[in-house]
Length: 221
Length: 191
Image (cartoon, rainbow over all chains, first blue to last red; front, top):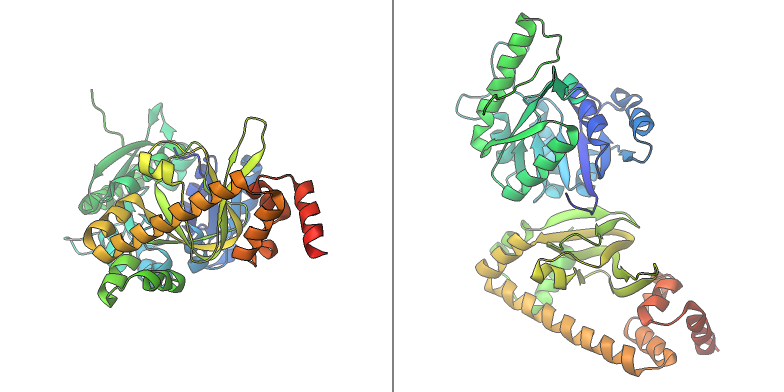
């Protein structure tokens, strides 16, 4: 874990996943920049973070470009459909930065993925941001898991996929700070599998009424 | 966002447009605010930073908590702790932002790639290191052989806008004299 504080921009911080991530990462040695296209969505997030972590270094931002420029790590906590337009806005300041793809390209009735079978949301994002280091992470966990990363005594696994070794190492540190068990699944091409895992988890959550608190755990010896 | 870096390259070497594009995309643009740290004591320095706008300074802190300024970097200058960068051992220096800055940061992996792929970059880097060595030697000579007055005079001769941008306590620390001595010297100088 670096001693020098790193800066994380959370784009879409007002959403379920964005705010859950922000609250739980605030414990670490990071500076957090919170941006949401609809500022009212952010509500009292800033105050809530400071209440739980009085020393947290957290700031509300009003522009995705400015947020990304200051950041070392950029978290896109927005639906996949909004990522292309966002990529155009931040591309020039996202060069060589870690870009975390949280999105699952799932259709409205949770029946299938909207991406082509031979690609994934993360790989598309990498195409739109060719000079950034896209890492798939935090997409196989539900928003409520961030508050409760240990369910029935089992620590939820969080899968990571990416092509850049150093970027993956930084993301492992994020996953550990949040409290999940990091598992590096492979290079970015594994993202499609991880996105399908979330589709299945959501389908089962609805069918079996898991109350939106559920996660993956690999049992092994 | 890359103008000053481009000028710095052009001052020393010639790059084709294609080579410039290859270089450019290896740098991480990073905006930083005053008093933030680019590097803190105990971390390994894995990056070289080029200042597009603003300024940085590096310093050590002794066992009594006194700050010793090693150097500054303004627009067009590079900043890193090269000792830590080359030996890959934890640094004993801090690099802090003096004025709100726009940096272009190159990590060691991309630096190695550029050295390998673009001979003009290797030449550029050699010239930068050469100049840094000369400046360092000059600084050691000044520190060992000059009076406080001479140190101050030489500093403002070489960099007239220095005094407008750097707080006096940091100037004194950089010159290795007390703030009181610096005030006295400046008083004499202005009269």
